[in-house]
Image 1 (spheres, rainbow, N blue to C red):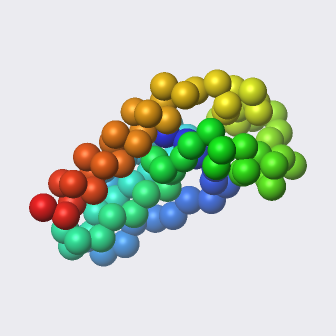
Image 2: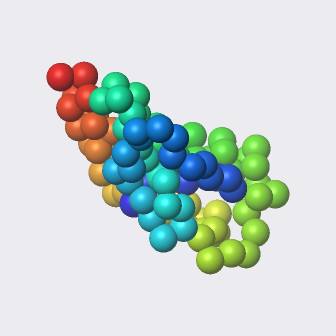
Length: 96
């Protein structure tokens, strides 16, 4: 589970291949031409960057199936660690 803060999505173009998806968003991540990665979620988030997003976009936290409450966004330290590890694994495999 990664941090998301999107209201829009996109369609894959050309020979792009999807490699991440969720119930909420079909095209969460893709690779194109084996050299371009696109992600529609945030693996780089920290508690501070999440607090910054909440502070600047609090009006977007409304009732919805895929929208968490403010306190829920800040109570997931273990997920931030896992997300960061995934980000480094993804980058290490992409570069090599």
